[in-house]
Image 1 (spheres, rainbow, N blue to C red):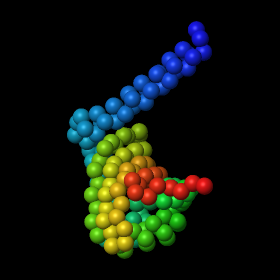
Image 2 (cartoon, one colour; image 1 turned 135 degrees about the vertical axis):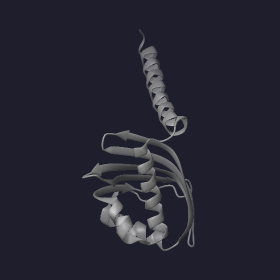
Image 3 (cartoon, rainbow, N blue to C red; image 1 turned 135 degrees about the horizontal axis):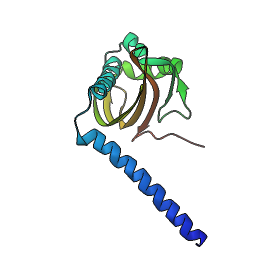
Length: 160
């Protein structure tokens, strides 16, 4: 077999695999009601946003794992919990007027949950919309946010 045909077959196979994963996640989000655990996770997402809107530092901090890693679209590299508390919470919490979040998929793996959703918010200083992937981990019967990646539609990262 020619090398070009092998590359083509590999590309097609990988594309079909990725398409299958996307379809599976879509079915999980739209094809059936969320399970009780998925509902629990989505309620944590709502609590996360409410804590920001209400400037509730204690609730926000308690949702985050001590080893959280976050990467927001306006940041050039990933950051940790202290940075998230110091910068993101203070920047957004005291200016957030309203928000909307729309779940797309919640995938469970034992004590880990991956949540994909759209967000839109309006603030006194800025408004934004985009998509989020949050990773939650259950530890000692409590769910904690351990990973956060946000992609804004309006403020793309700057790379030089």
